[in-house]
Image (tube, rainbow over all chains, first blue to last red; front, side, top):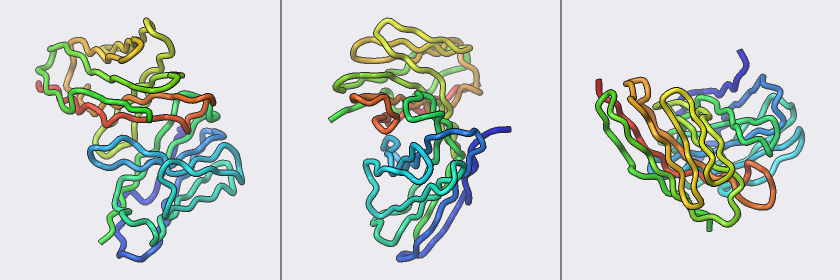
Length: 113
Length: 113
């Protein structure tokens, strides 16, 4: 079955540590995205990529970094510079950025202790 | 600044009791409006896209409608499996890109057997 796989599902880290969240898709989609979801707030875009080796900052990119070395993979690193990293992180993909339908993974919940 | 407001925040219905969820928006240049369903601890699942006022889309017990200022998600004779959070998102801007998506905070729907 095609889809998006995020790992790990739950992650606990100490303050000051960088963490990397994995996102893999086998849908052959060009565009991939990272969103952050906090209680009482709408999904907010962190980074997106329209094509391999290219990515753009979203609304809340500070303290995050990404790479897009392969079409299937779009990992997100939450760095120690991110002031409030505890959140639910969602990876998504679409056929291309003009496509209205986003396919989401099941999310990764990061808790910083 | 684009704004998307969903109401109510939470809604509890008896099984079979029809109702509507609202998504009102204040944006410059609406390109499309999207509805997603999100189960607890999961990623959102795409439901509908609406592009112009007067447009309607249906899927099982759900029907989405669009006016110039708001969208409604009507749920007819709901079942317990319809319990979820329903998210609304609007696409704006000059580019047909998902990077211009603005999400609402969602309506948490609970259907009581």
